[in-house]
Image (cartoon, rainbow, N blue to C red; front, side, top):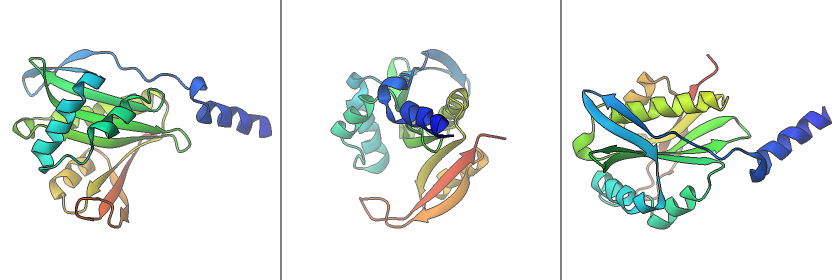
Length: 184
């Protein structure tokens, strides 16, 4: 039993034992439009911040925060989605190796591209990626008052877990912690 624990501990706490997360660039059709999905690069960070500014008025994530995330290839995967070589959305994920969970850290779609199925596609991609890594769940937080996003996540199999009081720094709004079980 101890040997099994030791092997698990080394594999999950030692970054050199973990695989570098990878994603193969691909062309996809969503609602009759062609997009390219690829891993985010440092050169994309300013665009990601600008997308967040368009969505929220002020970017919740700074340039430095995105940069730190992109420098963690063993437990972070950030994807961008482009139309005509212009980034129109992105999604960030973090692996919790201890709980076998892929956590969606952030997702943003340029307002003029919202309600076209891009967010749904990115979340489905995250689910497939998590299954590929043999993870047990996909999780995220969402603002309590963001009912349209909560309905979308519920339609994609997420269930409310609990409330995180005063979670968001900008206005101290509560967050709903949601999780989709991937073992079914």
